[in-house]
Image (cartoon, rainbow, N blue to C red; front, side, top):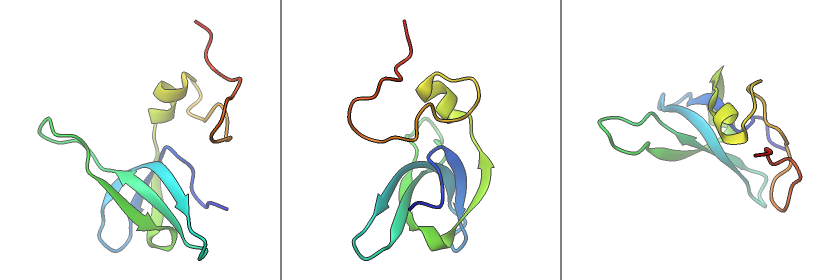
Length: 91
């Protein structure tokens, strides 16, 4: 089970790297890791780095999921992952 949600703003407590959680991975050994997308700078794409769950803390919420999922509340439309889902925005 994951401790953090996609779209949250998190920080690695060791390096100070801060970014939006864009991916999660769980390993057979029981380790959970998260991909953080840092801030884009100087017209260059954001830097992505992976961190263990135990090294991270949440430092804020983002509005990125509004854009991706087309919601206005800042929450995911569905916590389900993978496969077909019947929650697509109507055009």
